Image (cartoon, rainbow, N blue to C red; front, top):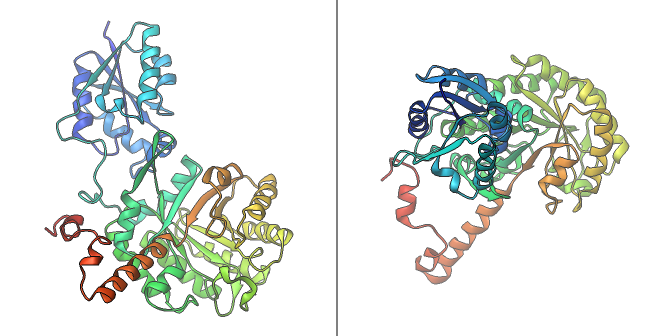
Length: 432
């Protein structure tokens, strides 16, 4: 009777390292691949471009693979105990910190039925991750458009960072950090009207028109693959908002956030220090319904942004507006606050979630920056947007370098504040 050989994989694209594992596994018996599902993959390291069924078809057509089964998480145990394979074939990367606990659990499980674990070295120079700055596989507007909803359906939580240039987009695309024994990164990008206006030296009053911002998105999309959420300010007249929705959907943008104010747009964080006028509930609901009717697909999302806390209108007003906006067709609700503490956000989430567990909620913790993501997620927040941090970091750094040159009548003192010339030449492949 043939032996059963179990291999677990992600299989975003066929990599040399993965083929090396499969070829080794075939020597020991019938190969069964445990393929991480989309939700499991999202929890490990963000969203995939190919979905589970697509990846499954790829593996099923590789010679020697007998069966592909779904693996619901990255810790092996459920799949191993269900299949009780004779062998578990793994690459040697799981000796690292991120996978070490899974390794120990798998070793213990295989001993229960005297199974054997075989660890093999990945192919020389092979990697389980594609370096984004070296190889940009690219994507299509349709694939990118769908990603946000896929992420929300998978993990239920999306981490978003502001971008203001293709270079900042590459940072969001590639940056990762270790937290609690696993790699974490950003899931999506945010196109902020405040940031887009500021980098052009213009006030945040809708002075920069959408067509100019769309041109920037095209440049951004040439070098990135992650989904984008677009800040549309008030959205303008309902009739104009319909065209904005169609343009964004055509570009491959995943969602638009539109705020319930009218007149000359002023930044929300200014609160009642400046004159700000809210749109009537009836008119804003009409704008949402017009936008939804303009969509060509069900993948695009319209998110209503509620300014009740910004303008001191209170919790009841925020909840009433949220219910009405969802009834009008809003896919999500962004609840905004300029308070230094998240209390009113928590209060809104608690009451909103008692009546609605499906509509996704968006938070932008610029003012209440001390709150942790797990605190927001525990209260039903699905999307957290870090709305302007890359630009706020870049401007002081540029000012410091410019001042150092002026003060010293040369640039040597600025060298320690800058990346090296060699580094900038090698940052983007093809320059050097």
